[in-house]
Image 1: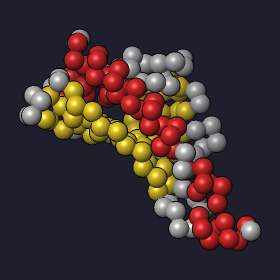
Image 2: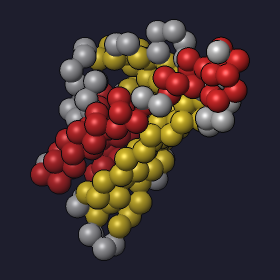
Image 3: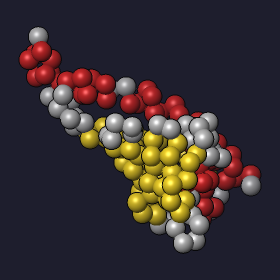
Image 4: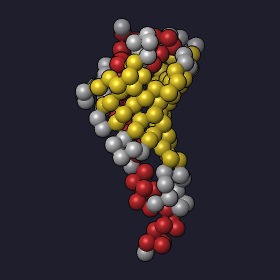
Amino acid sequence: MFSLLTCITLLFPSTVKVSRAIDIKAPPDSVYVLIADINNWSRWMEGVKNNSLQILFSDKSGKVIKARADPNEITILTSTLDTTKTVWTGRNGEQQQSNFVLFKNNTIKGTTLNWYFLENINWYPWEKLSSMMNEKILGPKMETSLENLKRIAEYE
């Protein structure tokens, strides 16, 4: 039985991506400010705003680039006006890459933001099967967070 399950789960992808996008009627630099500093995430991101945010490291300008929002440690790896790359490390040391990509959207005279999580999955059957839940676990939180971000960016 274990061999059969292993063979079946080997057909599953080894990388799982959960992605959400939203149009925001605000310029990219206004949206970027809310993304590029983890300290601002407590204003809009579900899971961060509900947990106490512990600042671990700030750069010379005071922008927070490493923090803990239980159970994750979040690090901003790079940040430019069009892409902010982060890594989320769980208690067990497993990592997920999470990126924010901003596009100027002339149709709405604003910004389109794409936010996605990437996770590399081991070949173990239980990991492959549990990865099927990523969409259901992360998706709704990402949607709510993006709506919060939109509201803040458009009305502040």
